[in-house]
Length: 85
Image 1 (cartoon, rainbow, N blue to C red):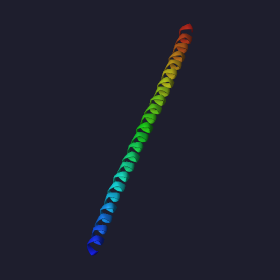
Image 2: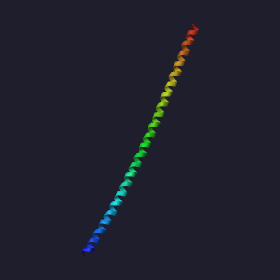
Image 3: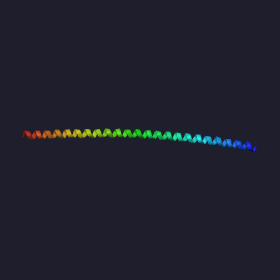
Image 4: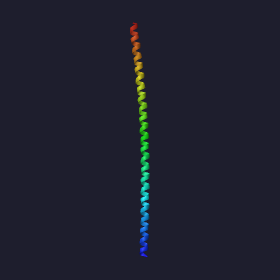
């Protein structure tokens, strides 16, 4: 009788250990999935930030070009006025 109880306890402990191992493996898989999702989200945000930076720099370059053109036209107009005098 005591031998049967010991066998039942051992079997129960083995089942608990197997369940614990499965739970740990599932927890690891969930954690890995969360990590991968966070990594993908970070990469997406990083790419969006780079795109925004590129757009902003293009706008700055356009403004510089426009100012240069306007400044050049003003100089030409001033030179033309001086030449007419």
